[in-house]
Length: 212
Image (cartoon, rainbow, N blue to C red):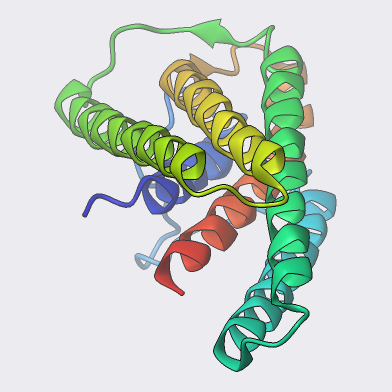
């Protein structure tokens, strides 16, 4: 299985690490002696918010698993709450992706890259993962119509919001990994870095939801 959220988290980490560079986000930046250089400038708020989401997601998943295993009267209420939480998360991620697009609008787009083969592999894995996510959402939507629940509308919105978020996030990654900071102001301010920091951890959270 090609896990879409994990691929997005990995590619976005490369994007986050290289925002403000004068080359497309591909080559590793290293210190003398071979140590990996990681600059957290303009990303602390995003990392903090992302950690909060990661912790909150684990809490929601644990409560959901406990309620399912015990099969008590609160199972349906907990299931409703978890669906509602993920609807909010998908919607928030879509809003942040559009905001990141806006903040990075002054970057220079470079279609050609010295390591185009590596970028093609990233794009291919991203596309395969995207198709898988959409297929799963469509199949689950069909299942929802067959098995009626008291919160069927919320479940359907959950599927559609996930599809919309996947499509928007894929478009964002395909474009933004080809953007470069071509002015001193952009290299200094690193616009969009806080939002990408949050999106990395949000994708990690979604990956763990699939694992559990």
